[in-house]
Image (cartoon, rainbow, N blue to C red; front, side):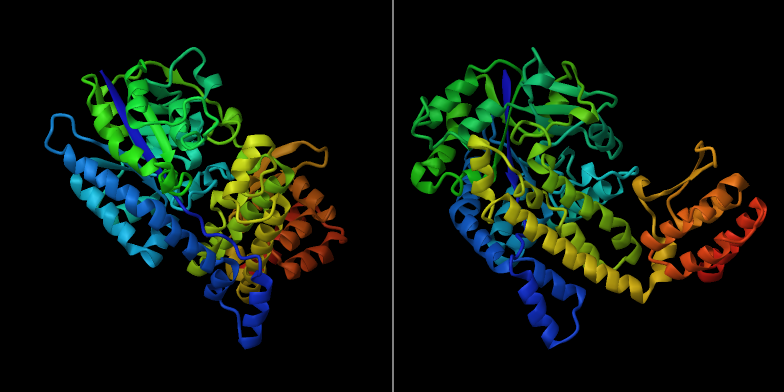
Length: 516
């Protein structure tokens, strides 16, 4: 007996507008720029609307109706038809705005009781790979997705995937602590080794169960269905069902982009008819059932442990790693700019600015900047609305720079308040050293923490950093507090004892910022 688990990935990004600067100038001539104006300037909602309307007509509406027909057809049988969907929050936003009948169909799916909705990050983002210690952004985006699933579908997901099935032991551990019973990822050959993807596994270091995608069988539909050069073309429902029937294991996990059914493979290829007849062909086999991720992890024991250390993170894209998003210098530089803005966005705490920043975390922005070769490059080009990777990079950095400019303007209006709230990542924190170059063990990620450490760090360390103007550089470059840096500069040339330096530095900061 084997369970076939279908999971459909449903996501559309907000694409960026290459004419953002021209739109900005036009808006500036008409009056003051506000955060909500910047969102309209940065994103090409004409294109976004066009994509949603086209994909809804070709894929989302007809494919969902076919799934509903099959669920209803087998609802009263001893072998019901079940599927799972992973739907990004930004997809939900767009179809609610431009094609609300898609939401109506998903609600109808929910009412059947035969569909599992899988959790993911609301923005389908790379939040898991931001160099932050507390997973704060990843947690936020998951909880935001959880909220919309509850509000819209009255549904609480039990299984979860990280964006594009990116996965490692640490991510699995976090998902386990958040209460999920299953995490979905890719059945990567070099992780599985001699093992098959067609079993339930357990994550290394936690109790959460892991489902690994059978990428060969998934890609037979997702990539090869309409390839006339494929030696198995044409792929029919009965042929594919026979392959599933002959596949050994407990679970055959098939995860496919939903756009496969009408958008990537047009209706003229026969993809809708394939989808229409496939459930019946599968259920003809006595030993085959369809199920959902949370059902199969309850049904089957974990056969072994999946061990994916963070430095070998996997995904379902390209070479099954993170190179689709962070594989070249342009991508890594753009991601660094994005991450560097986050502490200031959090300290400002303005909803409209926060939203724009989060929309810029959508993984597709980085995906378009990939520089690949051969068939992989063709896939990236197919999805990208831009001419090439450098073009995509320029447009993305343009959007980040526009947001950074607005952030700087807002900070200038309330810089002391922002400085009090600002919490920095490790790479921006201040590290205290002794004159000998020995690390004291103290570091400060905020001004509040800085003042606490000033009171207890070795006095010679404080004098050392003051004389070297390290404090001044930190307050000037990280917080934009030139006045504090100037005051510290004045005393740095004075003949102060180490203890006098401790008190004076603290007094100067408190004069401007209070006790924070």
